[in-house]
Length: 475
Image (cartoon, rainbow, N blue to C red):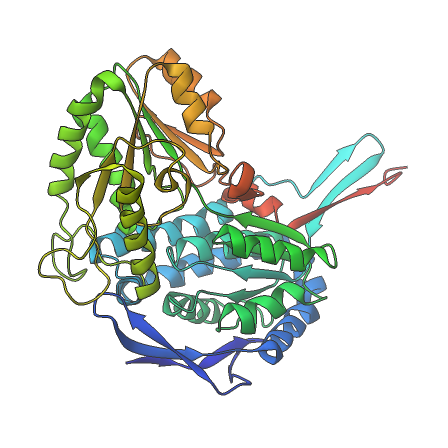
């Protein structure tokens, strides 16, 4: 059992004020495999006070010192590689290979990207006789999601540290152990007391008091739209800055000249990656009417090759969903798709054969989907693809943008001019052409109800800064 029932406050491991605990469930078995502290407002207040007591000192540390601190964090992070991989596989159900190549690596990338950004980031700029200064905003509250236990924590923490903002972090109570290892990493790396504080618990006990605390000047949250709205409402009472990365229902547009089999391969990957628990998942696949049958045949072949199973067995590509609640949610959407009249082309409700324990689901493809159906409009957060046909490019763009979300988009084809035109017309914070990879210093965030602000690299650092104009500084 992994039992870690202390909070990390002011550079020390301390008992939680409530004395209560939360069970952490292994999604591959459905059974508890550890406990964490169930924090409350008293824990939050202690953590915020610790951060507040050092925010002026940390704000004014030389940039080179912060860069060196991030360098030490990178070194200690690499030292804990196996521990992080094991924790992520246990708490998220991520296959071991993915825990290493996606989750572990993403965290490392964010720490190195923030460190490297400090080489060129300008915290001061002269404009005539005047000075523009960017300085750390102050105590920042971070609330991170369960689906990427190192990616979403590292990108916020690295940016805050680079900016000079001390933090209080509440990780998800469903995937808390990777965050606890990060606390140990920061301790080993010599992060100054009070700069990093971790309070485990649930949204009511920790998230709410953190969002409302008067000495917190910025809230950074990744998660669902309804929760983001509540955080924004609470933060608005004393005009905190907010950075929100919320849901998505990303379109994946396949053009007339695309290679059908290659497009199907990438489309399936975008749906099943991390068991579909990805805010940027390309779950609305838009194909020309003339290509529908060929695409469905190719997509079903690809989906049949996806191995769902024990995340610790070699060759497993897709593990379980994170919880019973998420399992039930995905099942309800699959049932809803059938009720709405979509054609079930692959998969369906229930668990895969031989996987009756844990929260495993069947990767699913719906065809004959209309864009006003629930399965085409709401974020399912599971491996469910909705195939929608279009007659011409203008209709494809109209369908793609007909959603309250705008986090990501994808386009596949041969003619580069057309690809560029479609990418520009999709209303989303990130658009990917032909499966192109990305850099960790590109901006990440969404349009519309997919959020406010941008993360990653220098864009992430900006979120933790205030801008000051000092007039007549050089006279």
